[in-house]
Image (cartoon, rainbow, N blue to C red; front, side):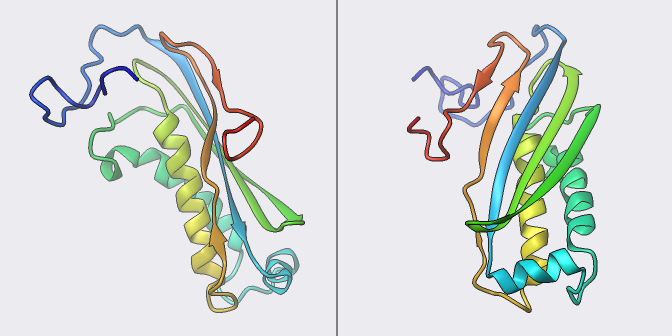
Length: 165
């Protein structure tokens, strides 16, 4: 593994200097999952969750989180995001909600952390909205699926969530 870009030669944490990097179109896709009991998923699909529209709240929370990632992750650059989208897929086996995010920017650094933050906060919002019905929900795996743009070009994750192929 190469030297970590957020650590200088003295071992101090630093924000990466992107001054000389080319401005390119950059995208990132991330995913996560909230596993839950079938009865809990039914509250979402029927619209009967006590706190209201679970997916609308989670979508807005995820988009807001993508826009504020630099306030949450200490060494992230503030970015003028051009797109942040959060989507959901209800699943019965395993039972739960698959969460995905796509984030885009035209800039000097990527949006991987913004996509991962969007998914994380959307998953946490789903948990918050449904915890009265099911405190045993499990969040994960959370992962980057793809990133494009910049010097390193395109990167895609392995097919399996555990990264083993």
